[in-house]
Image 1 (cartoon, helix red, strand yellow):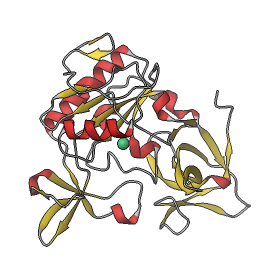
Image 2 (image 1 turned 90 degrees about the horizontal axis):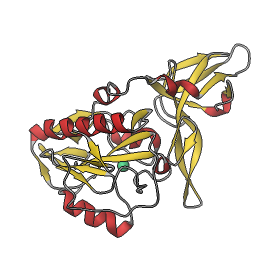
Image 3 (image 1 turned 180 degrees about the horizontal axis):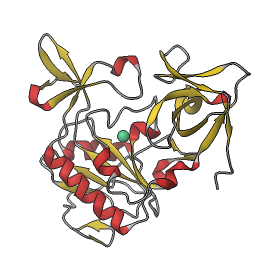
Length: 280
Ligand SMILES: [Zn+2]
């Protein structure tokens, strides 16, 4: 289905969120609401001045809460491939979904304490590796939701110069865990013709002769060591994790990296990385 005047033609427009200027989108950032109905989530978002361009309900209904050419506040402190602030260059698409769920006394509960049907949760370790999000459960995204999200993504990709689709927890590491492991990102990536432009933020490992750089499961020096890099090896930095400093989120030295530009393998300390090229 096409996009007309920056709105998906099949979408309802019954809810609106605050917008903050003109957006020329280069990315799509995926989120979940961590909530129940779309209308309750929009009420909460509007109180805070936050929003998404599109929210997709569990039954697959597509709610366009802001046109695709308007900036909304969905990503907060965020970075990707060397750029900061995804709000200013990405469209926010959000799923109605509770996110993390927990098995207590044989019953699945979401973070608000409501009971979840066993069919509606999946087990999963969060890929950012933090202990409290390992070995837990996540609300399953419905088939209708996934189909609608893919339909919207396909239409957006056809109408704008979109480089890639990312998840909030890819770009706001240590701050956010949406969308988490219940979402398969591969079908979204398949909608992008050429992702090779994502390989621009490349670094070289620089350690003392005979030393190696540890690859960690998560964004800390105490996190399990899951591999290593030799001096001179090349890595692609996807995103820097955040840490709190004077009540503000700042970039830490820990960054998520891959060997091939796409498939993330873990975290390294950027203190031992030297840029390759100019990143223009
Ligand atoms: Zn989010």
